[in-house]
Length: 179
Image (cartoon, rainbow, N blue to C red; front, side, top):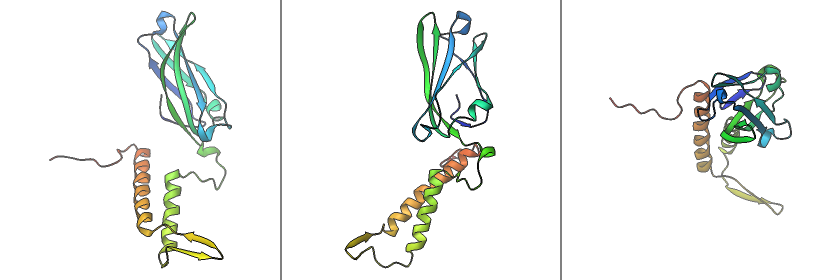
């Protein structure tokens, strides 16, 4: 199964399970359940694959996936036959928001993009500040040192670059070449 799906897109993939072929009477099922931020805004879904020879095809319509909440979803596949059941794979898929259905002004940035922007705003706001901490009316305020902010900024810049490269299908990180 893929690692990402946009809500409102058709889920369609094929799988072979050599130890449990459809031609031997096995059926394949997939269960997807929301995790974390997706919990509470989506119900778990169980899909039954169709078989052609020994190839299982799993499909969920665009109308069905449009109801899936954006966020992390766990999935598991298993085979069944005559009272027997065996789990064959498990994983996680990220459901992305349907851009065609988003309301105007919706923030579709990743956590890394939002955090990078916040760190850069703090850096700009602290550029002229001479004190690391101060006290006013009994309340103590402490600021993150600029050196720590710069380290965090660089870390989040790298994460954003990696996400952008992955979105374009490019390798993330450094590519070393020997001549």
